[in-house]
Image 1 (tube, one colour):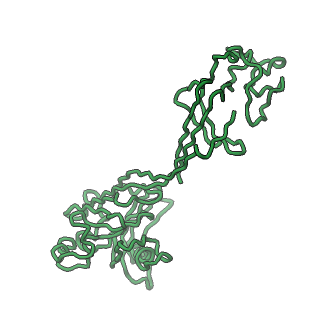
Image 2: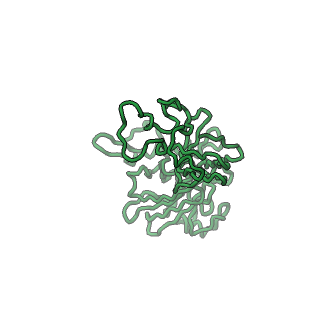
Image 3: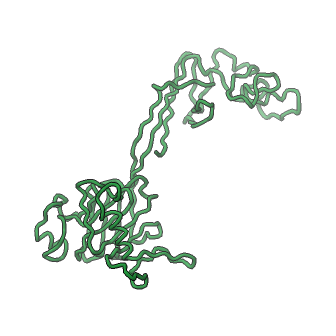
Length: 337
């Protein structure tokens, strides 16, 4: 039994969902890792003369990130260019990007943020110095120290510079200490003052914790399945087939048709398993022909134009389909975009 769903009864809506994550310096096995990036000449470069961060170390595999190539990678990918063609970063005019001679970088695998890290959801707690730092993002890709106002992005007093960098001079742009690139899961601490130069580098009591939310794009599909009066009022359940009740042994011949679902009776010609749809059986139990009989709806299937089953919905409890009453069943499900 099929019925076409009119376009007015179909709704397709995109929506966003968010999930909270929390990682510490002890979670390197999850794929979240930090490394140092240091600017220096690559002329006659050899890895043995460079500082490195070991990512994987097993008898079979060893993988490290070296500080000098890492700096050039970060610089070229996010800081050297400001146009859309050559830069992978956000091009928000209010995101301030300035890479200095060294940086601390945290990389988060895509499986933890999907489409992107949700703007204004990042909070980093770092204990690499005697002072516990709390760094948060401003929603446009800048990281700032929560002790100071994010409105300082264009001006900062000498006293604030002293507090942030540990000296009376500095190159700070207000309270900004770095950048976050939401769609790539990369966080760069660009400030080199004594309070920030070792962010992400500590372990144990000197380690860090990062909390953020992932952002996922989804699509909600909603179908309103209308059942008018006196429609879908015949059961397709095999239990209404005449002569089929209780425990039954299937005979080799003769009345074997009784054991096929209604409408799939190859013996008396009412149907076959090759049919693309069921019709009510001609031979059903007497109770199923009574005027007060009404089937119960337990399942709704959604089919495409080729009669292929695309989705299946199970009702929490069977609903009686009374002849005199119209019935509407809403099928709703979400899929990742």
